[in-house]
Length: 296
Length: 296
Image (cartoon, rainbow over all chains, first blue to last red; front, side):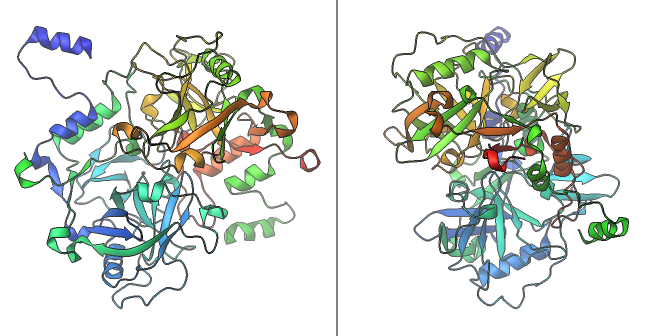
């Protein structure tokens, strides 16, 4: 850092280039951010306070996402709970057994939306190898893997990604039970489960919960970590109460610079830049939508 | 699964081969496990109950590990705390500012034990690519990366690994502040920090703590998540109270089978095996040492 400052002083007037990933994110212009549609934001409010907000991914799992929207609008999850927290793996919530009536529009046996065509995705390759997939990168603001031979792409199980719990195949899960990744990316689940979104705020309300003591991190019967008061789409909330988020456009110049900076850390702390980064260690920047006066 | 059983029935008497990673671990013979030496187990007991046990890695960071042993034996950490918990990153504990006298044998400025020679490591290559390093695999029961050109190997920042907090380089940290990885592997820290071990039990006493609300996950001054009552080496505990652990030998046949099973899941749940696995998603199996009567 001292060296960089000295060089800048010699070369004179050019403003210091942002060097850390967070500096690059902070300086990205407004045009490089995409505002999440309110119908793609799922807002979970817990009994006793606390909120988790999820961005849905209809471009990857349209039937499952439509189910989740219908379940939210039907009040399906009211009074349900987080019933499984397995360390270094997942936190899972929803209606595990029994439960209220399922809204009529819900598709009970959705198709296996584990991958989709690469067409229209305009994927930006990460540029580094991946032990799980032929290719990895980002598309539409999401981490993806794809296979040039099959032309199929899939969302990947990175930290904070949300998937649909299911029983044994060919069941794909209706959407009434959801989980979030709270540990090292369990990428072996890719293409085996429908991923439907990611947590954009409040993951600590899941990741910091006590771990379940039973097999697979399930809570002992009668033990409740967190009761769910309501699950609503932001689009169903009064406009003044709606949260709003922006995701960095993964095709933007700033995102490219961000990935390069994650792969080659120049922060003062680092002695040796890695020279590479794995897909799940380059999370797509997400922020609260700035107030109009403060937007650039 | 049904298909596999049918084939076995046709081929007749051979006993069913273990197919899942956990089945392979359960059936590994006693000779494929290495018992951790008591001087390599660090036992942290918290005020109000709870324990975290760490296996030290003297083969990779001998000076830092010697410091940690001396600090434990000197009661250095008694009354210290977990003062930083950053979601998807690290939980950090020890003496952040000030603190008691440092035992005389502690090396105040240890060398940068960020990597070591590959000589004597007998590394088993993982067999899959890695975005951070030329080669990755396992050695002496640990996950490692190495570079054939330089002949240097390093421990890697996988979930549960323990490192030494430091300030800016060339400081390497004395060992009085330690952290454990509680999120997706921050592999960009490899070769930039001294890794000294891994949590073998009780990581939930760190990973499930409330996240710190200040920058970098530090707790607000005056807020304490967990106070540390004692930190002892197992070798300093009465023999009857000593915990004992075994690590699967990473050169063993069972470990090889385990890695292959992690890379190609045949469990009934899976539709599509990944065909690969990343270093940090193949954690080395660790278990409590079985009682003599039950050991195989």
